Image (cartoon, rainbow, N blue to C red):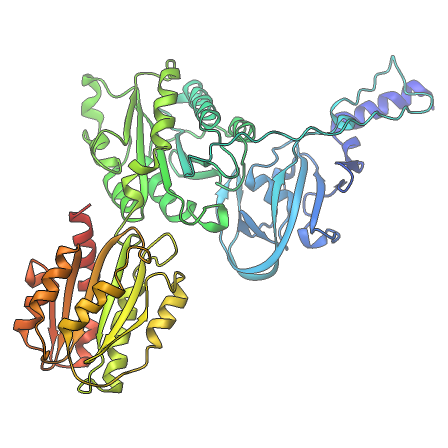
Length: 560
């Protein structure tokens, strides 16, 4: 066979992508190994650091691949299928870095980049996929022609030490952002591309980085679709590259549906959400939405998510009759104060709006919806441990307080609970800073031992103010005190309760059996009717859980 014929054959194979199935070195410790479309992570050889570099062939999207999970995948999943789902590779295949992880419970299903993954209750091993930083020279510059056949010994390539990309991130802008892009027929392909360009420049201006802002993209059209999650890309150039791969969808502008989907499924620690970091949704709407935004915006606010709405080319007077809700801009944002909305006249003149939008998204102190009644309160419990209560009934009291606590996001940066038990004496059971993990706090509450003794509720309120509600131990949230008692106090309760309220503590009273209604109302905050609860039997305490939780949230909302 002549050398020219051989050259043509190699050129043909290269065009098909078969030549790229040769192992390729990615530095001293990783070698990219060619795999098939259906190769599972469990099939890859183990390495000391549980990493592997693989080369996925072209056209894997044409195969029916089994993929379990989203962001984190079960090891029985196709590696190339997971890479397609994550947007790491496209139809042409490419290099993928695989990081093996421990097994887990609850692999969630989702649809992204043309791949529908399946859910799985649990599996013994997991993995994640990330994009290779750059394509090696051996692949990207390989050229074989009939006129210049390959002959003679191959020259050794001079290896230059790889330059590490410098991460210039904005650590003063620690936020997690879901960008909902309009992919409807209304925007069209051309303006859709301009929208992607704007978002790429926004990511660069905000200086996306590992310890700075994180962004992910959800596409809004007929059906919402996650394009990539918060944990997929941590550099602006990677975000821009991923945006280029996002295809135009078409369909109605179902922005409300996309917001609901994002609230329910996008912000998840498994997909890169960071606990304690403000969460933001920026919804871009070309013209007007096809569906209702009000219910979606309410769910976003109640979930502690700051919803921004960017309206481009707002409807002209002649089009207003086509708009389902003409006040959608006022209803959709986190607050109707002008801060959470932005209007741009056209996708062809957006440059001057980049900086104002970036500044808004990084103004953490003005993200009013980050704080909710569920993640920003200090709940103090003042528990009657007198002899008339008894050990069995005391456990029913703890059960009520535990049920109330379960409704709140107890954490270092969220809500906190603390407890004082009283008779004639008082005992600080635990303070606000003692247990900042929810399961530990609930366990401590349920494990409080019963004291037994007399009843001095007034002294107990004073003790709680001086020993429980200490600024150094509390979170930054609003202060609440829930008093549970079953009898007459032997001291004055009105004075200490008024003093507590003057310190900014909202007081709820829960009376049982012989607790005088006059004392309960004297201790409770205004309005008395919504802060006072009473039942004849300890078995009736459980009915107060949700009314008290709703009252706490109502008070929180009114004073914030």
